[in-house]
Image (cartoon, rainbow, N blue to C red; front, side, top):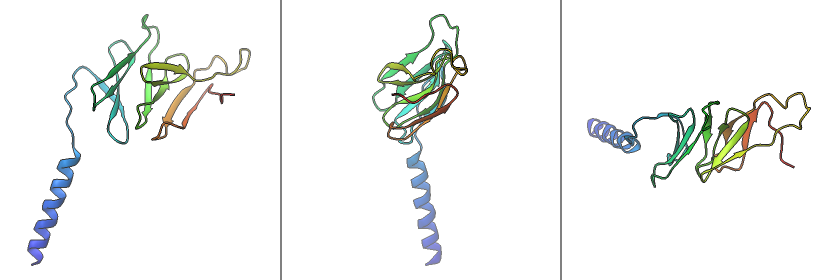
Length: 138
């Protein structure tokens, strides 16, 4: 009886772990982040930018500086596809194919010229945290 229970438990564990793994073959990218629900991933792209991919639909957005003067970085991505990081100049987030820069301190402020970074975003995309020159919107 004990042997049957142990065998059944091991089989259940094997099926659970096998079902949790998904293998996508997306060549030519170095992946940075994945959303908690596994739907969205971010990757560094060949133009020193960031690519956001919706794994369920295949929708892809590429962000980069055309002059390649800066390096974009993505540090987190929410379950609804809001990715956060910096664009080489300031903290920003990317949503629905658009790049939105987060507010910076006023010109003349000692921290105005220091680059900020958004490091994390909540699973629902409502909250973004970071450091450097990020200020709260008015």
